[in-house]
Image 1 (cartoon, helix red, strand yellow):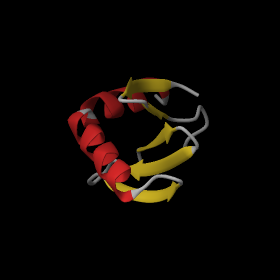
Image 2 (cartoon, rainbow, N blue to C red; image 1 turned 60 degrees about the vertical axis):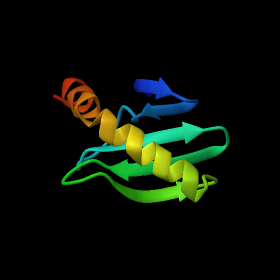
Image 3 (cartoon, rainbow, N blue to C red; image 1 turned 45 degrees about the horizontal axis):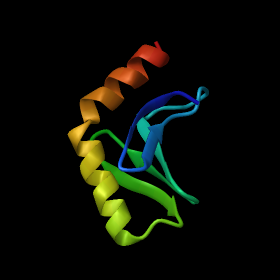
Image 4 (spheres, rainbow, N blue to C red; image 1 turned 30 degrees about the horizontal axis):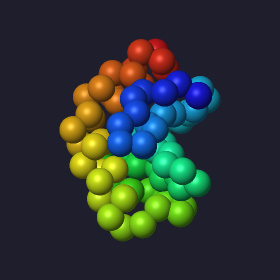
Amino acid sequence: MPKIFEKEGYRFFFYGNEHSPIHVHVRHGAGEAVFAIDPEVDLREAVALNTRQLSRVKELINEHVEVIRQAWHEHFR
């Protein structure tokens, strides 16, 4: 489970056997969410994260979207 980065208690990662399109998993406490990255950052699913947390996660993804893309391409080339 390659970790991309961690910020404010949110852990951004993907699994080693992922599939396209590019997306990122986010874990915080007992909560988890999955966001698509392309063509834009968009929530795909979430469990046990509230609206405020999901908004913050989306902001963090947008701030680090190039880091996420680069990590994806390096791991899955």
